[in-house]
Every structure is written in C-alpha cells, then in structure tokens.
Image 1 (cartoon, one colour):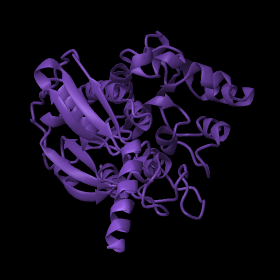
Image 2 (cartoon, helix red, strand yellow):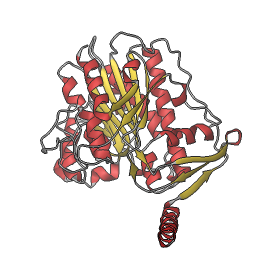
Image 3 (cartoon, helix red, strand yellow):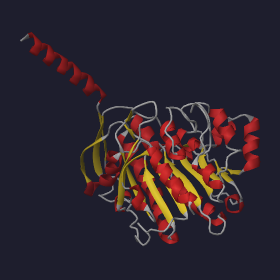
Image 4 (cartoon, one colour):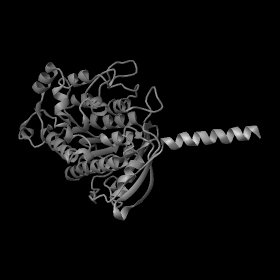
Length: 378
C-alpha cells in the first residue's frame, strides 16, 4: 500500500512540474495569403540540376508547418510538394543538437559538436558546400532573417570553434567564396571592428536596402538592412525574406558562367526564436512568411526548369503540438511543452530534378552529401 501511495505522489509531482512547462497559445483571423501551386514539369526528373536552393526553417517541425497550414485556410506551398522525407538532427556530441552543429552538418556533410561553426569534432575546419563547389565555377549565396553571424548562415561561410565568436565570424566573410549575402543587420555591422568593416566593404558592395540601385550592378553583393527589417514580423518586419530570396536567386542566376549553376541557402530564422519564447502567434506568422519565400524558390524552379529546391529544418523547437482551430476563420491553437530544442526528426520537402533522392529518413549530414554529389557531377 505504501508503494502505491508513493507512486501516486510521484506521478502527481511529475504532472505538476510538466504542467508548469506547458504553454498554450492561439492566433485568430489570420489573413489568407494563398500559396503557389507548382507545374511539376521538372519535379522528379532524372537529369542533374544546375542550381540547388536549400531552405532551412530554423526550429521548424511538422507542428509548426501544420499550424501555418491551418491558419491559412488549409493552404500552404509546403504542402503542395510531392517529394517528402524526414531528417534526423542529433549532433556528434549531443542527442539534441543546437543550430550551429546542425547548420554545420547541412553545410559540410559532417556531424560535429554543439556550438561548432564549420569545424569538425577535433576543431579543424571542414570545407562547406560553397567552398567545395567554387572550384567547379558554381557560385553561392546566403539569405537569413538572423544576424549574419547567426549559427545557420555562419555555417555556410565561417570556420570558428564557437558560435559565440561574433567578431571572428564576421571577419571570415571577406575571405569567403560567397557572391551574395543578405542578413541582419546594419547596426550589427557597424559594431564590428573597423578593420572587419573595411575588409567586407572591399570584398563586397555593401548596401543597406534591397532596393539600392547598386544591387543590380554589383559583382559581389552584401545586403545589411536596419535591424527592424530582419527582426520579427510582429515587431515591424515586412517582406524582407521573400524579397531577398528572389533577389538572391536573380542575382546569382545572372552571374553564373555558361553551363554552371549556383547554390543558395535561405533561412527563416525567427520561427525558432518565437518557439523558444513560446510565442505561438509570432511563430505562425514567421512560418507563413517563410512559406512566401518557399513560393519564390519554387516559382523560379518552374521558370528555370533546372533547379532543385530542398526545404527542411535544423531541428524542432519547443515540442509544439497543434491543439485546436477553425481553418475557415484563420484560427489555430498550439501547445508548447518546452522552451528548448527537441530531437524529433524534422520534415523535408523537395521539388525539381532529383527530388526523389531526398525521400525517406536521412541525417542532416546526408542531405549535404547528396547536394554535393549532385553539384560536383555537373
């Protein structure tokens, strides 16, 4: 009898603690934004794609995507795609990854320790996709709603032992092979050492607006808008992400050599940040904005006919569960069970030539390996 009472007491205490970690959120009357319906003309084709666009929704698991789907009257570009898979995200040292280790796996094809930016488990630099493909004449770019030194964008151009080495990460940009970057922010840039600012401005045409005329004529372009333009939608960001995605695509495509292509990484960074804060309405708005960027990439893939688009996530954040909703009214409710990352596998969607290669279950490092295999055999 005593054992039973102890078990009940322990269960009650566990439930009480767990309940304190659960946070419910809701969003109502979300304006319908529609979605893009692909032509599927090149989807699953056997020829090697000329261009590859990798899109990473930071912290985006199936529930985050589904929340956007239900809030948008059961319509989402994500869910118009036919080739689906799953990605496991653990790092080399931790069951639950951070963005740096997962970003590095996606960028290099190797798993590494949490907090690493482009370094292996022995803290040696690993060549990233842009570096690997540059020798074949393939040019690369990075777009993010995070700061340029954010873990995911940094993994595609920097090599530092710890994601917190902000000045060192920025200082890696002038020596990178990137032809285009757009991320936060003008204010962050101006806080860097003067030597780093001058080196970046020497290597790139640096502008503070996507509408700057220099964007059309630059050979290497860096876009660093004011912080509000890459911050949260609920705090004033407008169309930076879909607009920068299209600009990056057009910029790179116009500068590729004959019979060569480009690689572009696009990150929707603030889905993760909203989920860390258990801010469900903000997470839904960020997901819907990321879906607009996805639409821009898929539109180009249809226009071009020679582009593969891969959409996944570095990890899931907050253990989100879709709880209730009324899609016809743009209403949806969700429950966060934590404020941290989880190890739950994340969905992968692919569109274009060789999209079928990304079906099934794969590690994040295997996604990069498949991308490299395609790009290096061009």
